[in-house]
Amino acid sequence: MTVQDQAAGRLSTAPAVHSAHNYHPLPVVISTAEGAWVTDVNGRRYLDLLAAYSAINFGHRHPRLIAAAQRQLDRVTLVSRAFEHDQFEPFCAELADLAGQEMVLPMNTGAEAVETAIKTARKWGYEVKGVPAGEAVIVVFDGNFHGRTTTIISFSTDPDARDSFGPYTPGFRIVPYGDADALAAAMDDRVVGVLIEPIQGEAGVIVPPDGYLPRVRELCTQWGALMIADEIQSGLGRTGATFACEHENVVPDMYVLGKALGGGIVPVSAVVSSAAVLGVFQPGQHGSTFGGNPLACAVGREVIAMLRTGEYQERSAKLGTHLHDRLAHLPASAVRQVRGRGLWAGVEFTAMTGRQACEALLERGVLAKDTHGSTIRLAPPLMISEADLDLALDQLEAISR
Image 1: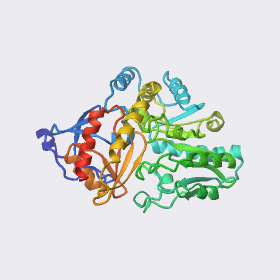
Image 2: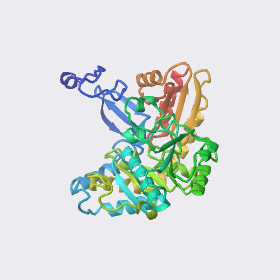
Image 3: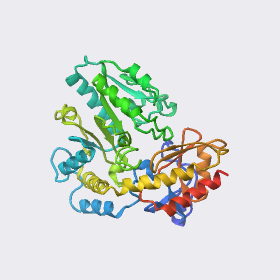
Image 4: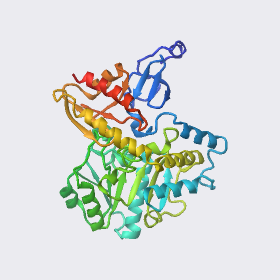
């Protein structure tokens, strides 16, 4: 969009000239947002059914989160970890308690948290489990998405994320997602961790078979490996529980959190585990200038306080039932499969691509995002009203006819 277009309030759909083409956004330029609604530069409103891939679980500009950020902006925003600040220990204590763990290592982005989890598992494996130096293995799953850093894409099975970025980092073993026998066959004494998404988001909201996560837990315990749950997208209320693992009564050894933890205001991520695991770090062995900064901690503490009420988990469960009831009635001639849990769904189309479906929804005032060809992801803010949810689903039904 040119300066002249902005001044005139016109919407330009021309491709960006000055930014690298690492994304293929829908042709909408958002100017303001509140709750479940966003407004473009022309003043047209859209219902947001993506919520920034679950980073906006509480809606755009939630008053409590904006107030928490503003209070901290008026005090101090960054001191680096060279010094302590008064928000850091309360944030760590409150997040550890929410997850039923003991220690927290805060970072910024989800990919940073995954990298931290990998380093933690390897260090723990060498120093506690006794794996020979340089031989640690982490088991991962096909269809995974944990970020796009060099180490993470080394075990991706997505060609777009992986191709032409080698040489790749070794130390990973990929098995089919949802296949407990394949995981059992991959386990040995060198496995220090099993890194799993309880529900695979980027792959199209893939829910594993009932009983699968408990079997992952059993195998990790049997082989003395850490079960590492990447709940960056699935956690913090999205599925109708604080963590998706709760639906199967599974407690992992380590949570990897992000997205919604920053309330849609600042990037906040964290690894949460026991003192026996995170206690392997000594000063200077891992860190981040911005990780655990005062502004991030203040916002994160308010997110935790909001989750403590259970309101958002309950809304996700209730509205999620309504969402999936309606999606189940989409015509079979247009929709091959619907998957998901809580306020999270993947809708796989038969006669159009996910991109075409999202463009059709855009024309009808609804924002969603495609993934893996013919699938779109729906992840509305957890505070969305039932009436607004129905309004969006009406449009989805209309494009499915």
